[in-house]
Length: 640
Image 1 (spheres, rainbow, N blue to C red):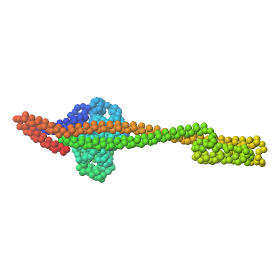
Image 2: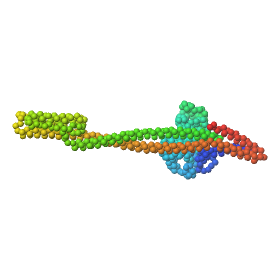
Image 3: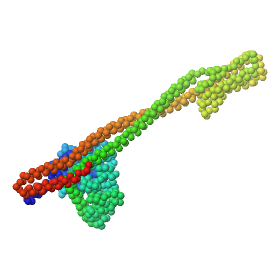
Image 4: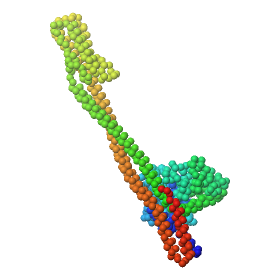
């Protein structure tokens, strides 16, 4: 057998599987194929998933081969002015090495446009602004090509690393946090590898509730795809001591120690995860650690080199067509889980939104009742004010009335003056008449007071209004009392005294009438003022209620618009997922077609090689290997 011929045809052993995977990628991750220049390098698709500020971007740049002395320059552009404590990545980004000294972005002329650092920073800043303000729901990936001048000269270029950096989970900005959750399921299914990134001193991020996505919950069952990247590992004080003491001198011993720490957290993870752990130190912290010239520096440099080489080897292994086809077979399951997650989150969100709408609606109805009650109150007050104004007007028009009964909120009424007989013109008779009329005035006042005592000021003496009107009675009585003879000798004297008595009675009635009229006027004005204050207070409440109702009715309208929008987006997402699920279920057909096509090609070549026993034997062996590979791959197909 010619060794060269066998080597050539055997090198194409898995070509059929690669073709099957290619058709899969074109359907589910077509953006992967973009580049600034066409090349034949193999591409590895890697997803980076983790919390904000654990060193994801620094790790990515190290993995890509960026010079660690230049990482801060690149990170400054990628962060686009973002401060610490917030995710450096705003949009779903895939980092790649540029073929020239410029930045390129896949959404700008399909990666052909060139940008310097300042221009690239502005582009990334605008993308972040759109996400943080909730102005974008765009979930497509942007390929970011980093200038080659930032890479170390001897960086590994054999594989085109497509490192897909999702924005940090648990970001401070709620729109950004919501956005990243939406992205996660879109890219997990078609990745060669998924790196879960967290700090060595924060291993709790491996808990399902911290990962915050059911698609990642079984990461420890798939050691080929999932790797755990633990940043700031070499700067950990305990680990540093163990490296110095040579207790940690290999990836295996490193991971033994880490697994011990994981066990103390009761995460209950299987021992097999040790094969998935990669303790790493990158960027400025790494450069500061290795400044010295001691055993720690020497051992750390060698150990990190071993760890990174092992990681690069795992990446290359993940690109094996057979491994990738296994991912393709699992795609329906991933997508079904994503669909279930979408429905679960949709139901939670809709329930929350509906509850908010009902709560606001309940508040509006309560406020409307309050509004109506106050409108009724204001009508009552207006009627009362009208009545008070009317009473004030009538009170001021009132004239002294005799022989009428006293009433509430009306000036005093007096009894008619008794008839004074001229048959008995004596002083005694006039004194008796005077005292009788005086008592009648007092009785009339007391009668009026019975109806109106509540309107008299509490600090006032109710009888004070009697004092002045009755003074003239005392002066006349004293005058009569000073007479020594009971009889009048002259009719003119008698008539003068009778006239004085009648004038005194009328003057007393007049003064008391005006006094009670003034009391009523004062009372009514106070009532009017009080009602006016009450009217203004209730009017403000009505205005506030109206504002509250209008504002919250607008709020309900916006919530219902949001509800409608969410329903539309959800329906669209489900349609997309259902289409993907439907297409993914035919993945086995892609494999079978590729297999049959390759089998037909080899069978044809076998027949055409008649007369060349060595070639025929080679093709026959390759056909048998092909069938064996196909059976192996077919056994990967999960039971649905």
